[in-house]
Image 1 (cartoon, rainbow, N blue to C red):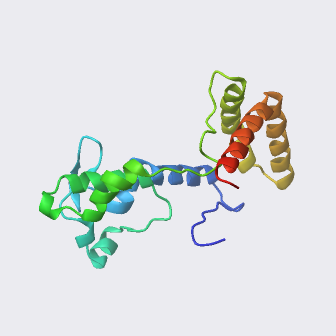
Image 2: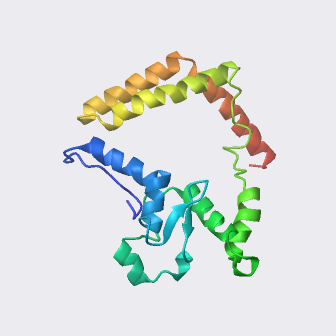
Image 3: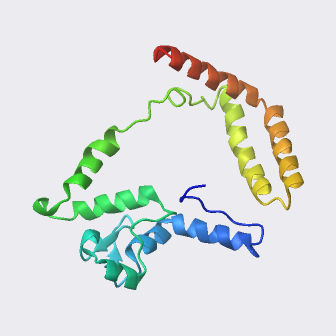
Length: 195
């Protein structure tokens, strides 16, 4: 399945605790701890936004120091937004002649001007006041109800029954309106792109 997959097996004695751990790791606090370690090592305090005020750049931390603190520069589970903004906050605290030009370019150009212009994305947002938007909002709410049931099913039959129950419930709320709207926008986008 590749290197970037995390699974909770059927043999897990307490899968809820595993979910809690994964949730914590992707929280700002967990992300900070994973990448920068505990307070007192690379930083003593957080700024007003909750980003660590580093004593030295992360790039200057040796592999031995990283290992001794338990840091991971590459994390399988991460909060990319938090870490990117922490990197920008750290860079902004440096004098101009010490700023990392890559981080400057990311913060001032890439992050501000990056956009996903895929035919599946552009214009497909639904108006929450229209039937397709109301159905989409209901769909998202029902996902919160059914996804845990599906994931935590005791066996395949229970999982498939929960999936079918979710599909029936979603379509009973008019989800076909959302599908028709989004597919119409997608088809129009493909024509604009000449596809």
